[in-house]
Length: 166
Image (cartoon, helix red, strand yellow):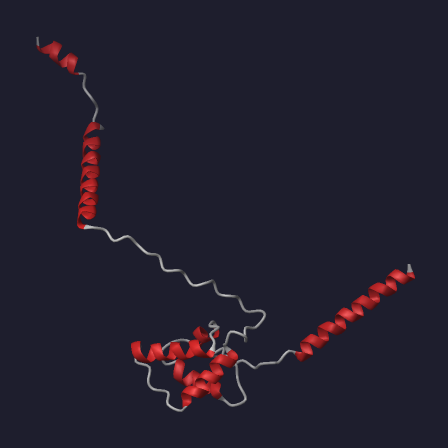
């Protein structure tokens, strides 16, 4: 019995030691409570906060997991389509920060994984005749609905009416 208890004790101590070792080796990253951005030693998080929060929430950044190339594409898209200003010499710093702290390999273990992007669905274009036949179907359905409303009225027996006239 003592042998079993000592095995469990030894296993517990080893497990606890491994857990402490893993936690000690995990890099502690400070997070800005207002923006949710990770604070880096160079202070580039302030540059990100000043540049990105003008148009959208910093929380949008914290949800992304892009590599440096895709962060660069995203910035270029915002510059061409959404009037983002030229970042100049700061673009390298911005890309370094984003790819380091919000890159594909920087995902924290407790963060949810986003679903895969939706695939484009090809729709069959409708011709003019398809549209007209759909309109005709709607018209006939609405006419059927009107006739059914009039048929809901109490029916009279036509045979009785004819007999009374004679």
